[in-house]
Structures are given as structure tokens and as C-alpha cells.
Image 1 (cartoon, rainbow, N blue to C red):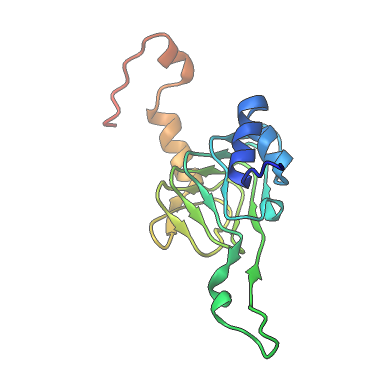
Image 2 (image 1 turned 60 degrees about the vertical axis):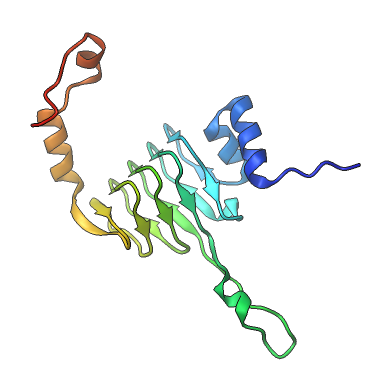
Length: 167
């Protein structure tokens, strides 16, 4: 008897054995260097996803690489329509928890996608987007400057520094 394992469970098994970046690559995702992959929920086509270097994919991020709406429409031969499209993530991108990325989306380098967003259109490089549908709400450079000025460093946190996060 042949054992059938769904794609999601295969990813989880690979991830438990060798880590999530290895698991994602094993499933067909192209991934750059220095990435943190906390989840990799993919509708079905892992090979249609490209992730640059130094990217963080937070918990519960869903990559949808196809639009199944065409399943409702048949041609003269009875065949149904199905649209597939690549998802491309540039370098130095942070994707927040529970984000959904739709087919054909490109997220430019040095961008942030806020938690819970639905990304239906491509994101220009250097942008912060959020909402449903996601829209530009700020710039990467402004966020970087604000973080550098007000957030503690990892060394400060490890030494017991108590930040005032209200700033």
C-alpha cells in the first residue's frame, strides 16, 4: 500500500528534519541566502515562488499561485480554465504574520508587508504596505530611521535593557 502525504505535510516533515528554508527549497521554492522562513503555506505550486535574500516570512503566510475561479467556466470541449502566475519576493523584505499573497504579485526589494494584509497587486521597492487590499502606508527608509532611533538593539535586550516602546 502506497502512503500518500499532502504537500503541506511533506513541507512540515522536511522542516522538522532540516529546517524551513531547506524544506521550502526541497518543495521547489527558489530562495536566496540569509532568509528566515517561519511558514510556507502554498496553494499548490511551490515552484512558482521566488524569494530573494534576507527575507523574513512570518507565521501563517499564504502564497496563492493560482486563481481557481476559471474552474466555473468550460470551453466547447468541456475543459475548465485555470490561471497560474508566479509570486516574486525581492531582497530585504519582511512579510508579517497571516499575510495572503495572490497570484502574479511581485514584492519589490526593501519592502514590508504588514500583518494580516492581502496583497493583490505588486508592491514597489522601498514600500510599506498594509490592509485588505494592501496599499502603500509608508516607506522603508522612514521605518528604518524610526527603528534605528527608538528600538533597542539585540545586545541591549540581551543585557536586560528595558525599552520604553511608547517612543
